[in-house]
Length: 399
Image 1 (cartoon, rainbow, N blue to C red):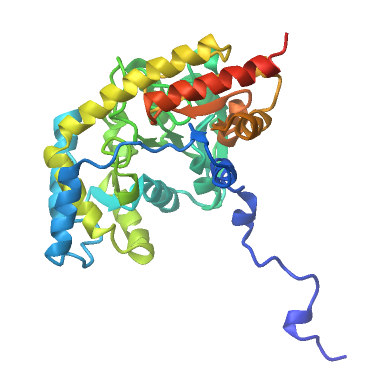
Image 2: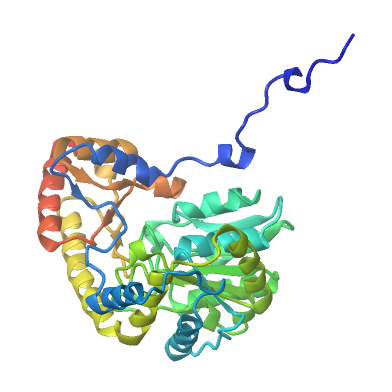
């Protein structure tokens, strides 16, 4: 009997790769697709500054366009940007990164995270991360055919990840620890002494630390500790940062990675074939941010702090117990008084009171029982949102 044509043999295979099938669509975007069809919504959901990019940054980009600077840059990023970024990291943290080999300019910190995972994670490697965590962490690991390993954190302990819990999760397949403080979605900030404990675990077990510090400039009454500054950690840390949050430059898509030369070289290989270079105009604006943007950052941080205090106080007063966030621009209140899942709470609140929040389950199992509320919106909108949320909580509060 003649063989069947190749395309007719057996059961048809999926056209989609297994890792892609394993990841879920963003739990954040689901709600924003819904709210886009509803008028009058106050959004406490999008993790984006409501400030416009400071004018000097915009003006520098406009001038670059007028002068015809619309070509590719070096794969690593514009030399002047890398020089200024190297100087900034030295001034801020006493860290010296060679701009010609230890810094890579990326399309936002999201690309930097993706490149880091693809450069160092192999089939079956495990990456330890806190739960809850930013929604992209799982996906970036899974897409490399690695395995995310979640370490629970809780409001009771300030959503700080425990070094002991990390060490208990280590196996012979563990390759890296991925953490992000100040944290999205909780706003938690890890103190230096506890980060030193995590660093000792990493060194003792010869693990990489991948540190997402995109919110490092947004802290309130505490000091941000850059992980690479800890003893012996510069060589085994991939430091990820960017301009989106602190300079109100989300749409400009400029991030960076700082690491050992061998790691940056590996990340650059992937970057060369997938991206080529970050947007030229965005890089020009980032140069200006490092030259003249400090006062704007300070003003924005001061305003975020005022909003933070109003939101946290208001959430607690209406019965949604809220741990005090000390970084980023998120509050993560408990919704247990309403006896709903976080998805039910978020959907009903949106439909009934036109307030958009993100269900905690979008950030991991330990996020259930909470919702994320972003206070990067005006005080007036925060106060109105709290008023609407009070009506909602009073209606559904379990006695």
